[in-house]
Image (cartoon, rainbow, N blue to C red; front, side, top):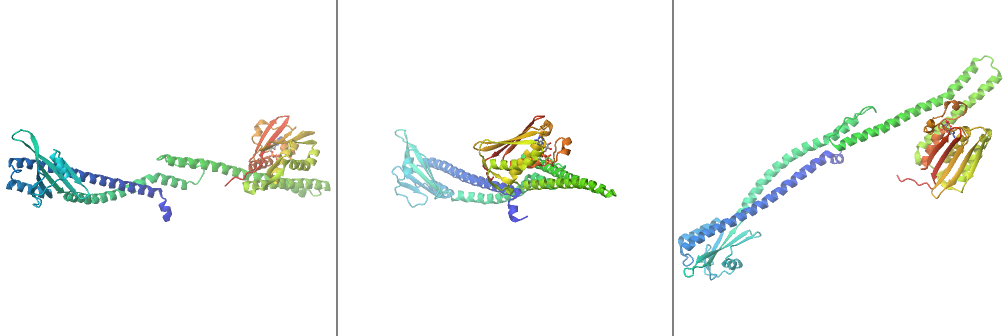
Amino acid sequence: MKRSEYLKSFRLRIFIVIVIAALVAASTMRLAAGANIQDRMVEQRIMEMTEQIRVAATRMRNYDFFQNTSSEAINAQLTLLSSVYDGRILVIDRGFRVIADTYDISIGRYMIGEEVIRSFLGENVTNYDKGSRFIEVAVPVTEKDAATGESAVTAVILASSSTDSIYRTTDDIFRRGWIIEIVLLIMMIGVAFGVSSLMARPFERVTKAMGSVVSFEEDLPVVSDYKETQEIVDAFHKLRQRLKTLDESRQEFVSNVSHELKTPIASIKVLADSLNMQEDAPLEMYKDFMQDISNEVDRENEIISDLLELVRMEKGASGMHVKNVTVNELLEQIIKRLGPLARQSEVDLILESRRVVNADMDEVKMTQAITNIIENGIKYNKHPGWVRIVLDADHQYMTITISDSGNGIPEAEISHIFERFYRGDKSHSKEISGTGLGLSITRKTILLHRGSIDVSSVLGEGTTFTVKLPLSYIVEAT
Ligand code: ADP
C-alpha cells in the first residue's frame, strides 16, 4: 500500500481519533485533578494553621503572654509552629506593636497592615498569594475585661507559611501521574488498535465479497453490521441488476443482429444453389433469380447502414453537429425526396407549416429521423391514402405531427415499436420491406436533441406521431 493510501485508511483514522481522545481525556483529568489537589491542600493548611494559632492563643492568655512575653514555653511553641509551617509568627498588641517574632527581627516595631487592622476589628483574615506561594493568617485574640466583663481584641497573631512543600508534594504526584498516563496511553494504543481493526472489519468483508463476485447470479452476503455497509451491499446489488439488464440487452442485440444479417445471406445462398443445381436453367430464370439476389443484397445493405447509424448514435451528444436550421425547408426537402415512393404507393403527402420555425439541430440526423416516420406512414398505409405533416412552434418548442390514414398499430404493439429489430404484425413484415431499426434510430436522435416522441393510433383509422423538440440546443455541462 502506498503511503498516501495508508493515510487515507479508515482504520488508521479511527485509531488516531481514539488515541487523541484518550490523550485529551487523560491530560484534562490530570490537570483538573492536580489543580484540585493543590487547592485542597492549601485550604487544609489554612484551617490547620488557624486552629493551631487558636490553641496557642488560649495558652498565651493563660500565661498572660500579652503582658509579659518572656514565657519560654510559649516562645518555644511559637518557634515550633513556625518551623512546622515553614514560616513566621508575629504577635501584635493593641498598639500595633510587635511583641513577639519567631524571626526575632521585628520586635518593638509597628505593624499596621490591612489584615492586622481587619483582624483587630474581630475578623479572622486569611490570604493566599498564589504567585509567591504564600499563605497569611491573622487571628484576633479576644480577652474579657476584668472590670467591665466585655470581650475585646487585645492582640493579633499573624502567621505566614510558604506553600513550597505543598507544591513539592503535588509535583511529586504529577510526576507519578505521568508514569500512569504513559502506561494508560500504551494500553489505549492497544485498545485503539483492536477497536479500529474491529470497526473496519465489516468494510473489509464487503470489499472482499465484492472482489470475489464472478457472475451476475452470485449474491453478496448480508453485511448488516452498519447501516453504511448494508447500503453499499444494496447499491452493489442495484448496480449489478443494471449491468445484468445491460448485458442481456447486449446479448439480445448481438443475436438479433446476427440473425437479421444471416437472413438475406441465407436467401442468396438458396437462390444461387438452386440456379447451380439446374443443368440448363433458362435465361429468364437466371434473370429472375438474379433480381431476387440483388434485392437481398439491397436489404443486407439497408440493415448494415441502419446498424452503423445506431452505432454512431451510441456516441451520444459528442457525435452531434448542431446548427440552426429552418425546419420548414428541411421538411419540404424530405417530402420532395419521398415523393416518388409516395406516388408509387398512391399516398398523398400533405405539409402544413403553421409558421416559420428555426431550430438548433443536427440536420443529417434529424432528416433521417423524420424521414423514418414519414416513410413508415407511406409503407403502412392504405392505397390510396395520405400522410399529413403539421409543423408548429411556441417560443420554446416546435412540434411536428405526422398522421397517416393507415391501418394503425394494435395496442399491444405500441410499446414495442421503438425497440431495436421490432417489426409489427409478422404477416405484413414479409411484403413490406424494413429492418425494424428505423423507429429505434428516430427515438435515439430525438432524445439526443432533448426532445420527446409520442404515438397514438386507432386501428383501421391511422396513426399519429408527435415529435416535440426544443428550439435551442443547450450543451449539457459535463
Ligand atoms: P420497420 O419499418 O423497418 O419495420 P420501424 O422501427 O420503422 O421498423 O417500425 C417498427 C414497426 O412499427 C413496424 O414494423 C410497424 O409494424 C410499426 N409501425 C411503424 N410506423 C407505423 C405506422 N405509421 N403505421 C402502422 N404501423 C407502424
